[in-house]
Amino acid sequence: MPPFAVWPLAFFWMVPLLYAVRGRGLLARIACGAGAGIVAGWCTSLVPTAVGLASFFDRPLPFGVAAALAINGLVGGTAFALFAALAGDPSRGRAPLTPWRIGAAFAIGELARSHLFSGLPWLLLADALAPAPALAQLASSVGVIGLGFALATANGAFAALAWRDGRRAAAACLVLLACAFAAADHFAPAIATGDPGSIARAEPGAASRAGALRIALIQSGTPRESMRDATRVAARLDQLVAVTRSALPADLVVWPENAAGVALPANAPLVRSALDPLSPRPALLFGAPTYDPAAPTRLFNSVLLWDASGGERGRYDKTHLLPFTEFVPPFFAALGVRGGHSAAGESIAPLAWRDTKLGVLICYELLFSKLSRELVGRGAGVLINPSNDAWFDDTAGPQQMLAAAVLRAVATRRPLLRATPTGVTAAIDARGRVVAQLARGVSGALVVDVWPVPESR
Image (cartoon, rainbow, N blue to C red; front, top):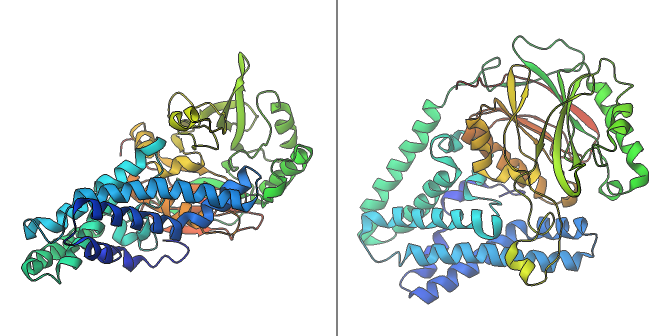
């Protein structure tokens, strides 16, 4: 997984664990699995999670470390313990079925992790193939959990190659999997520039290509320390507008999650006045906290679509909230744990704009396959992920989110655009290729021509 991203190990990494549980009883296997899950979580996500939690709650780093240890241990340890219990003893049972049993058990563990305590599908096994999108094409037909199943099955087959009674079955399994990966890439639609789902980087000021939408993704470079400073709201808006001006003309400008920094609708005039220097005035998709004037205590994490005149054309309220930062799961709330108090949106639906529909996934929602599938099922031709990865600082967190974005694009066969304040801002085509991205920490605009996928496909 990022930052190392040694993707070939995805086919082998589980072999030591399978040897460790071979010949052991149920409780011993569960203990081994839990230990492996905890170590895996600590190795891959302890630092990003610890830094992110400490930054978000403005607490010392030891607080973030303690919280990250608990979360990774609870979620990762439980999922791997379930896998070890369900996989059984790899040295027993019918040899031809052993690799497939291991793959199925791991897929069930990842499904559990995707739903446990509202779900934490961070770094699913399929995400490891983000640097090799040609191998990830299988996700378009079986999903990311199905791709994880195939990878886990390969691990089981490689382990079984060393067992005398399972070598033939393991070799046959590997051949079948190799054929499945090759066929998925072979039959995946070729996407050339101008085809639906394709993306091409564009130079600001150049005419947009035929049939494409010119979209500018804005990375403000706003330091994390200033994001909650109410006295710097106007300065942050001015910075966003200045970067936006350098990207015009564009059909649509995308700002990051909570880019406005002030609640709407009360502060809508402030945002509109900040946009006055822009000429020509583009349509704008941007994040902001919103509330219903009839119930002002219910605050939503929203993305709004404004037309060139500043009129609201649509709004999406985040439906899947981040545990502890936006809400506290009921089990922990009963224990007295406190956290964010955001309200969840009631439904997920794309935003209609011109002749296409924009499927919005706000930050953490990117990790949930169900949400992207629902958006595509409702006609989304482009997926857009306004996010704020600044809480991760210089850890691997932003690259790990980018890896998830690659798999989401492959699985849905839709181009996916990310806009963040500090990175990784990127454009990914429908085959999962990162066509363009901005360096982390810089202020700039990523201007791309995007060919949406028609609603009929």
